[in-house]
Length: 173
Image (cartoon, rainbow, N blue to C red):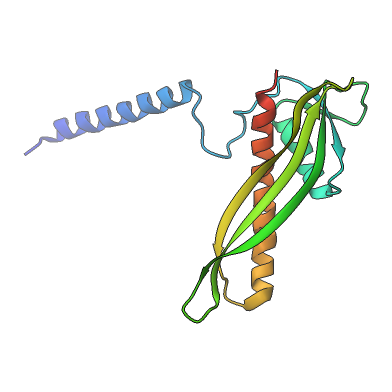
């Protein structure tokens, strides 16, 4: 049987071990998914040309640029890069069908088509797409509940797609 003194020492070692582990994780740059930081655009000034016609996407991209350490501009003379949003789309597919023929779950995909260039016209990234995807179960409440769930997921997927876009832009030098 352990003595109270031994228990106190063991608890102290456990706490010290947790602190050392936490410091080690923090020192290597690890962070929770969705935590601020981790993406760096190194102060790049980016003009966004919105051919997609989506104010929600444009606002999300602007926030993404600023959170990643870049600067958003509407003035092409200030820009280091020009990010063109060519289009965006959302697609819903049935993922599984029950025995009665009713849909049990769906897959929602959000896609952003983009390209990146310099203001003088040199292409850095040709036109390409980024997709974010989620599955969701058929909600109780029928079509209205499904549409509400899709709208909520579309907002989340837009943020995921913008995060992926910022990670992609980070790789361009």
